[in-house]
Amino acid sequence: MAAPKRKSTRPTKRGAPAKTVEARETELIGMAVDLAAEQLSAGTASSQVITHFLKLGTMRAKLEMEKLSQENQLLKAKTEALASTKRIEELYKEALDAMRSYQGQESEGGDIDD
Image 1 (spheres, one colour):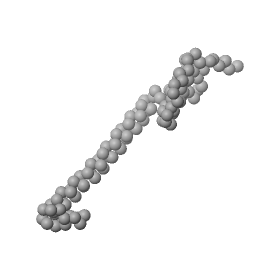
Image 2: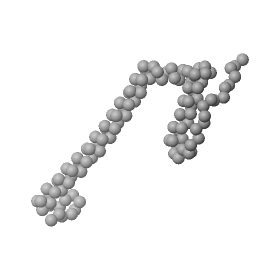
Image 3: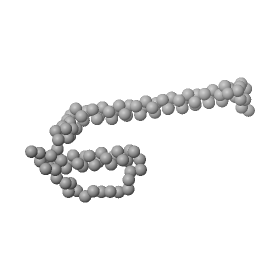
Image 4: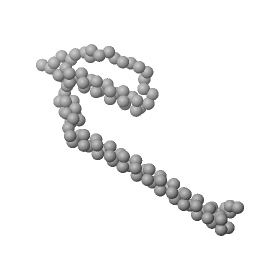
């Protein structure tokens, strides 16, 4: 026979409802983790819950998280490099246009700066 289900002894915290989907998701994740902690403490956690938290503690999981973090940093660096390259191209164009205007030539935009 299965162990009888115990009612939660922790008080329910009802605050203002979440205003965004992300906030609601965070709230639900927190509730799920709290429930898993209660089940683990009471010894009533399912094998899936136990396995999930055991996997989180493995070296492989830690390495995967580190890899994801480094990939994220790499993507940010690439994005910054692209933005920097674009800005440099704009500066070169402005410098060339300025030099053309000093020589009395039209700029690429067709304007003559005097």
